[in-house]
Image (cartoon, rainbow, N blue to C red; front, side, top):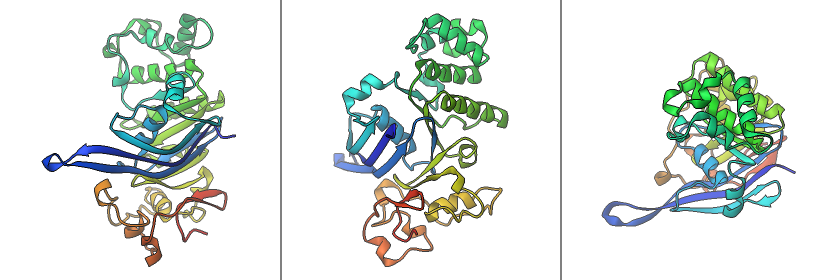
Length: 307
């Protein structure tokens, strides 16, 4: 049984526009995702594709004006708001993109000790600090006294001591030098080796492929493909969706081929397939309706032409 199943997830926000007119802004459309324990699933896509919103939906930390439909299951149980509040920070851990998530009034050691679920909190905190090469005195420092790298290690330490079955890492590598990126990826590998399922949210496909077992590709608020990471090889011939192939071919070590056009905004979505206006394989049928995601060659894809 998958540790996490997301089916037909849609998210909309009630907002007030010009003239105080209320409008509904749909930002996620029938998104689907499946994760297994002991695997790293990377969620990739450009900015605005819905990656962080997916994480916040799983955690149950969306704003109050969000309207959520569809179904999410954790270990076979429907992920309701009440279950999310029980699991959050325990069985589901979050490594946020920004170190500003650390409480500025709480010392680093206490951050980690509060997350300990098994064993003695102080001992577990010191063990994990040693594991991630944090000096003993770091436990007495406030977040503003930590370097950026130390603060990130504290966030990872909090996830590790929680022994969470599902760890969500939201953009953990942007702005880091190659050595720091490799260190961060090593932490994610260690979480996987300890049996956790890791959801790696990133725009860096190249880094994701170094650790991922599965890759889910998002575009304009929906999932267009979920495929084994091994399918991102050669000229992308094993991939099922033209956008996935375009992402792969855009990497410098591949064709470095640009993709014409831009991702549509939630207020200007095309009818039917959201990628159709940029797709060289699009036909009139593509504009009829948003395709359902279906199984094709060991992966899942949202394209009527995929074979």
